[in-house]
Length: 409
Image 1: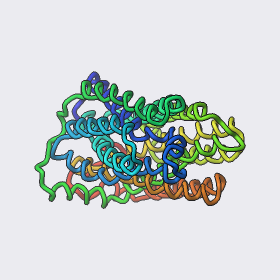
Image 2: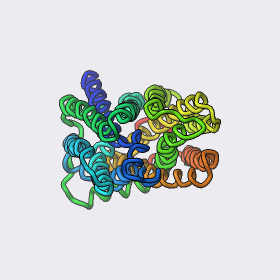
Image 3: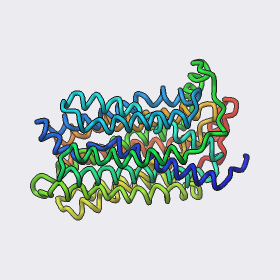
Image 4: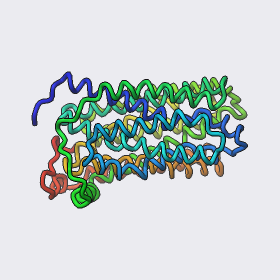
């Protein structure tokens, strides 16, 4: 494998970290001000949460088309155009006075964001040559956690004083700065050969990505893990601002500092996966995620915060390893489509799981919701273990060029 300039790799890592920060800040901008939004538009918590589900649904639906289209248009161009559209819509959002229109804009914004989310992994693998992929993916996922944390924290604090519109606008301005830096730093791609805009080879890559049974394990980790994750963050604000905790909204936003745990654990998990194997690190991440859920069962703010930190750290460790697994496992001819399928699972899980998890919370309270979420995580862990047991002969596949750069462990 051709060696890649270390300076170029560092520039790619920094650019993608900034792009991920902008992406996640925009994607979840309304989440910390959902209680204010619910009050402003006279909505119940489930209806207000449509602003989150709409964006993740748009992302899930657009992931495969845009990931496939990037094979023909180029990965860098696709990511830049997509992020610019998402940013413009983010700046427009605070000025919309009608809730259904807000939901529609969020749906389109999520679809635009898919152009970066579904392509970033394939771009990283192509342009770094797979060198230290675990560490590189860990840094990218760290960017998603920084974006998620800073966007939610900034939006929540500003929203408590300037209303939900001020909170959402503050997040959009933060993302604008990151978008400009992302465009300036991201190098032109040199290791990806564009394919003609023909459906036959592009759909062929999609078939390859769907035929590999091993890839279904990270897809399930993405879907079920993200379903649990978005459920917790959607309903936690409602839980801690209500009796018996009665935490003020500005202080409640500080719980999003738990995202810092994901920034650390995603990087550590990526390096650990390079050294000790994906299966082991991925299973440990899922177990830690479940332990965090159990800690949050207590009606004690300190234990809830500690549990949220553990939960967040475990989830992002698992997500970082699973997403890198897809990029390394898929052949070059199907890497974009495999990454898009992962994003489809990830954000499809967010949209559907967020609704189901919120429904469980409304019907059975936090304890009943925790049982449901633990079952989802257990299912993902079983899928990882089954994939690990797939015979070696199935790990190499039968498609031309289908070879795993490093042993699957």
